Length: 186
Image 1 (tube, rainbow, N blue to C red):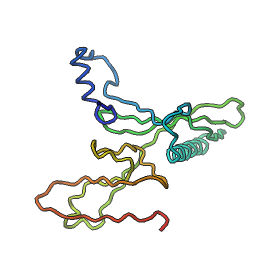
Image 2: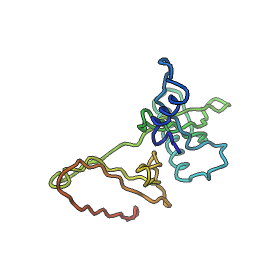
Image 3: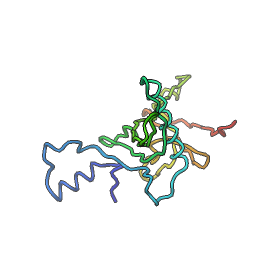
């Protein structure tokens, strides 16, 4: 079983073995779009956390557009699609397509906004074993077999099972690390 969200290169190798090499003028050969949500989908069940985050980001995009454009009042409507984009097997961001209502116009307009979670990782006391920590990411839907979080958006809700992924710089000395999950409300 090959999944392009995990590794698209193996699919290219198989296709080239079966059908021969791709022509040199094929654009976006190493780009991959994966549909995360579409408003017409009936299966799998709609994820409330994804819907909440996508709606919030659509409202933020509409407010930003309203604040940055003269004589343009935009209000976000229904989220239509959420699509993740990967290039060379690296997550680049997510596109949210949503309907909007522009003040003074009768018909709805469709807009898209692009976002990507920010990586804010800082080691406060960079001494001892902490010097080997390269990055940390909190997410959910961790696939142990693939060692990959399928929740590229890193959207966490009340029913999420959070996971912590660490990237460490190799060293010769072994250390134990302890992490404590605290409830978000204190």
